[in-house]
Image 1 (spheres, helix red, strand yellow):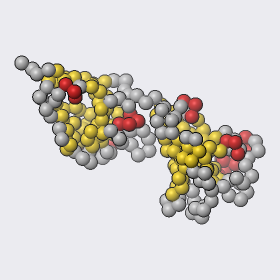
Image 2 (cartoon, one colour):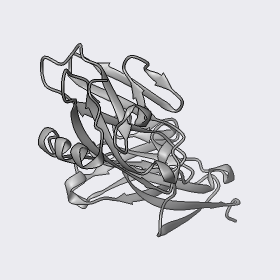
Image 3 (cartoon, one colour):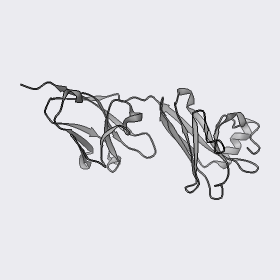
Image 4 (cartoon, helix red, strand yellow):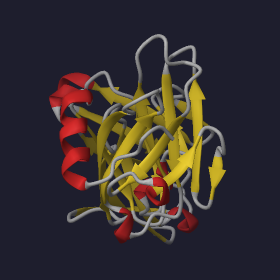
Length: 230
């Protein structure tokens, strides 16, 4: 890679002049995260990479010349002019500052990335809903007004990182066997009705609202289904 930085001060000054703001990324410990960096027209054929620290050769984590390395994978979408690095098996020590780099003759182009990691759990408050076998029950999921038009979903369990992939029903598919989702936008909540309850429906649920530029927003519900009511 062309004339990598010899000392940290030079690197910082170089990045200040070449980077367009800081990219903030948040991920869950134990999960994966994607870091996407754009570049200008004309650099489609140039090598891209992700690095840490001073971005010397030993600090480079993965490059488009070697797209898989350890827990890093990189893909360059030349049409969109965005290259994305996937980091898997996240640990607390993975948090911190990274740099997206484009190799050019002379000084490489850098964009600063700040990765924040949070525990894969939710939530401080849990709403309890009780019902009986054979009954129907609705789970209410409130959300803030700015999320009225966002994608909503519900899943079982209490792991935010896998909730969307394991969704029981979504706002794009509002009926699925015993589940029905209704988005009451004026009331700023969506409700999920579950019919013909059984005791196996008991357990933890997460209501999710998708956000495009940050982690999804969740609320937690504990459903308790008792035996047939006499």
